[in-house]
Image (cartoon, rainbow, N blue to C red; front, side, top):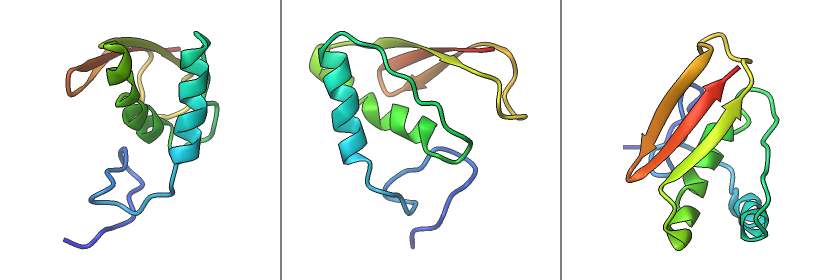
Length: 97
């Protein structure tokens, strides 16, 4: 199957055209290594969900299986509340406000 542009869900490298975010992921890892928090504050279609899903792979190094995230209501499709997102054996608890 040929790759396609996706504007509806998180991107998957084998299925969708993507920009290379390796440098962004390295910057996030430096913050996590230092015990810091980070935010991704961008408009829709910037790659926030894709970045977080790809970053979850780095958490394997720390044997961390649960993370927490606050999202600001900016997408009409999202509903205010708390939801759990599972990626493999990782759990992300998201509070949408």
